[in-house]
Image 1: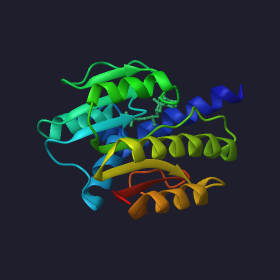
Image 2 (image 1 turned 135 degrees about the horizontal axis):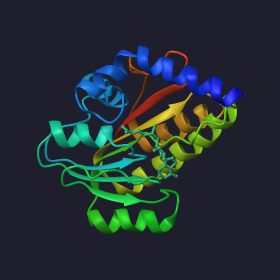
Image 3 (image 1 turned 90 degrees about the vertical axis):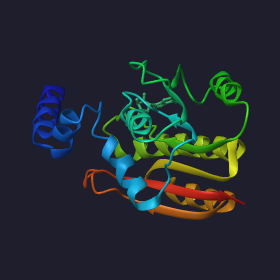
Length: 203
Ligand SMILES: C[S@@+](CC[C@H](N)C(=O)[O-])C[C@H]1O[C@@H](n2cnc3c(N)ncnc32)[C@H](O)[C@@H]1O
């Protein structure tokens, strides 16, 4: 009963949401695309000819945006869920946390990369604290991977939740990168604890 109520609310909210409508008109797979666009407008993370790893990429709007707007990017997308192919990007279906997935990513690029972006989030349980802890752990894992795989002037962007893991992530990011910013794009829902951490230049 409660589940039905939640899905009705979700459907109504989606109908009202201007970003959902805009994403349909512009043929993007998710409203999440506008978060990446806004992050890029403010923090200048994207340009042509970059090597990019998109963690937690499904259904694929961030990858679509990169392939559509920037020329010659070498893009690898990974998610637990399979997605429709996007241009000439390379897709891995798997759990990023597993070492076999990390090995596949490393083998694909052979060299260090310019940009690691992560929008990874676990399925929400309804318990906001638990959700933020588990998603925080994904962010830390992505940060450690980015530290090893980025070029010295590389950039790491990740979803981050305001919650118990926030301070730990910021401290580790400051030890790893020279420039750290936390930004909540206007298209991120006000009621969500989500923000994004933008980290530039490895120490
Ligand atoms: C908010 S969605 C990403 C939306 C995406 N940025 C887009 O623009 O379409 C979060 C994604 O993270 C993925 N995810 C969560 N945990 C993961 C893991 N351990 N490995 C890979 N993907 C994961 C989920 O399957 C989900 O598709």
